Length: 239
Ligand SMILES: NC(=O)c1ccc[n+]([C@@H]2O[C@H](COP(=O)([O-])OP(=O)(O)OC[C@H]3O[C@@H](n4cnc5c(N)ncnc54)[C@H](OP(=O)(O)O)[C@@H]3O)[C@@H](O)[C@H]2O)c1
Image (cartoon, rainbow, N blue to C red; front, side, top):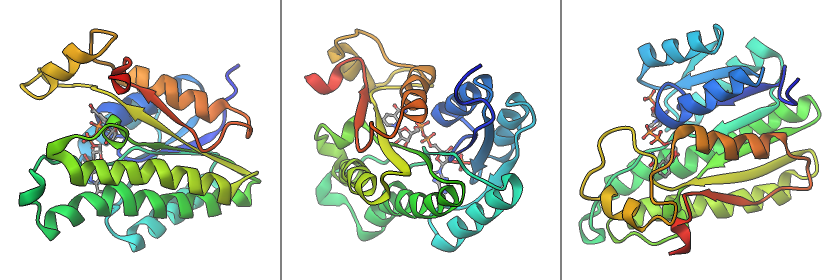
């Protein structure tokens, strides 16, 4: 039986794409998955159905009050939390000379602020059960500088360093690690992704299931692995 069997794990942004892939893998491993979504209710319900009738939780993570309500509902439903995968995020492309305050806040409110407060609320719930595992999904963009994404890169670099600080703060009961995806497309490759895939040593894009591999590694690990970032990027961060 998988070490994750029976564990309660919440995945944010789990309706579609990478979050859905992580949730489906967790369900296959026997975990009890919570499916968080914000606007994609139909997709969230479909993912939940495929996860054996998992509960769905709606929250706009821009607002700390919504995050507190979300974790209150998760605690009320499951009575505990063993794992948290902070996957929900936003992605925009603007030259830095054109970024407005609104553009900056649009990205940082979800990619960085929400991840912090989800860690905070998730950790409080985990500590009631003795501890747990947090995995923050960052990005290759938090490791490598992308000229048209300085605002996004800053948010994801923030996630990586915040992961390290929280790992110290929450040890030994809770580990905090990060998975940094490379190019994981769900639509046709475009003029931005084609050159990145060509530069990828693995010579192909990745899949949601490969990101789930990294997440499962950290969720299963002992508390001797914490504060780390695993790039799941076909080697692109080495370029
Ligand atoms: N795909 C890639 O190539 C790639 C590369 C590097 C890193 N990543 C990272 O991997 C993770 C998943 O990527 P993805 O491409 O699958 O993500 P995505 O589809 O762009 O976003 C995932 C989910 O985030 C949720 N979300 C956005 N704003 C929210 C808000 N205000 N409140 C609550 N939820 C919100 C959305 O939920 P709803 O749809 O329910 O509104 C969305 O489905 C992200 O952290 C991303 O930065 C992805």
